[in-house]
Length: 294
Image 1 (cartoon, rainbow, N blue to C red):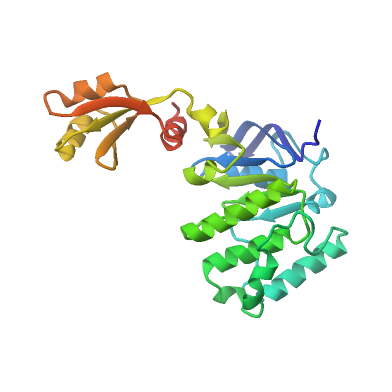
Image 2: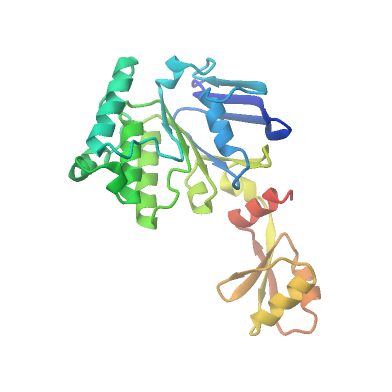
């Protein structure tokens, strides 16, 4: 049985009277990309910080490479925080040199190790002498990834790594994540983007500090159906649906009503001319249901 790189068992974290995490279980093994999916405030970042040992648990336990988090276990981790972890007043080359010196002093592997994918520090050579504060956001993200991967970590903990970048840059960063997993690294990545969630081997959906679903995107959606309305006068259809308490979303030329049946939609529309059918739910629709307690 492969070694679990990171594990959380019944983890709780309380801040005063606020419970940020409540009974969360999580595990990631080599080659897996586990997506932590949840809205802002769901507890994703808190869980990442607890796995690293940066926040103590209020209950339950966390382990890195089979042991409690420590400096020794963190040497095998590549951590990308939301703030990226780069020094704005240093150049790209200086940031990488500083990181290498730190990991070399700690006894970790330094340099482009076997798990470092293509497109790492080599693709940043033209920006080597540029201070981080002067870089475009997409290049800054690439520099942060290069720093995270440079010591060939066995586990990547990535906290919303593509936030704020354009679609092309997002695709390139996800290619980097996939290459790292193909090389044997385990990955835990937080996101609230459904397109990115589809890239993950497995998803753990958090809502209000609790795990509300686990599995592949197909498993989480399951057999859920969505009512689909097509009407020439879709604004009038939208008004009738909303008046009946049905939350509808415009999708192309139709309206989708997650979690509702075609019969419910037809009853709300009354005599308004419209085509009402049912179709498979999307991951995004299922996610919003779960976040709302459905």
